[in-house]
Length: 361
Image (cartoon, rainbow, N blue to C red; front, side, top):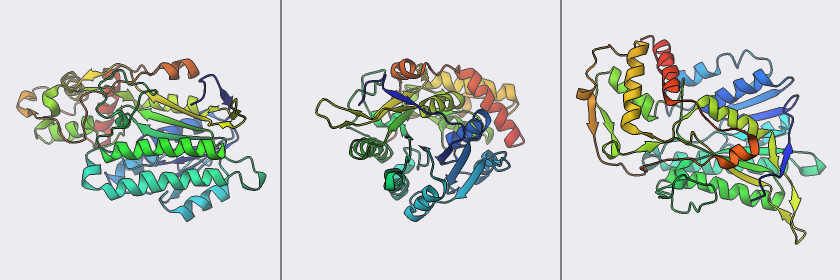
């Protein structure tokens, strides 16, 4: 990996930016931010709108984006190589942000095919298209930014997690596919001089988030009067990272591509970088549940006299899960002057208010 100071500044204004997974949680927030902040930008969004979770949430995320003349939406699957090639040929993106993926640790045990298709085949199609964007002497893609995950750290016992550490022992197929993305990106950076930056996201949450995430699932169950299952008997810690912090990090990273340099042997040094984006402040799961309950009552999602103790169940750890996630974000701070800092209660409060409005509680 390059020295952290080797960055090429990229002006996003008046550029074509491709965002895959544009109707996803992070993707939709990112598209909105890019359209708001950069004059003359054109954002091309791809999403297959699959029904892994409630499609109405994806549709609501797209509202506002679709009415913006600087936004182009393409409904399609990045595992479709012909479609990806057509999009690159038609729009010639300068920066590509690959967020499209099959997410979720537990679902990768139930439906592994979806992960190989979206996370391996889909990612390969994107990076191959980046490679061929340089054909015939064209400028091509200036920066590929792609989503990895804190899941790659597996059962690593050294905390906080640092990107320099070995992550060769994934405990889920999902984690293995994300680690594969990092390896493929490194090899393409080396072979084809494609500036690539991977981002390991840590437990992203917020309004219009993914219903398969714990805070959302807990809310659904509590509202329905069902018991919530707290794994590892509550002895879990998560580095919860608010969506606005994630997007701020992505936007900053997009504008600083690893430089194309030559090593002492005269051969290219891979223009490749990797960062954690996390809150660097892991929260105990039981404390997290307490905050969630309080904010759901405050927002009016649950009644003030709700019996929370009767709706909690402490259970053992489940396959593929880890006890703690904890991000070392020092490189992100050093290179981009940014450290996620939104307090948990503030973020959960925003989610609870969104939930009340979206579901007309």
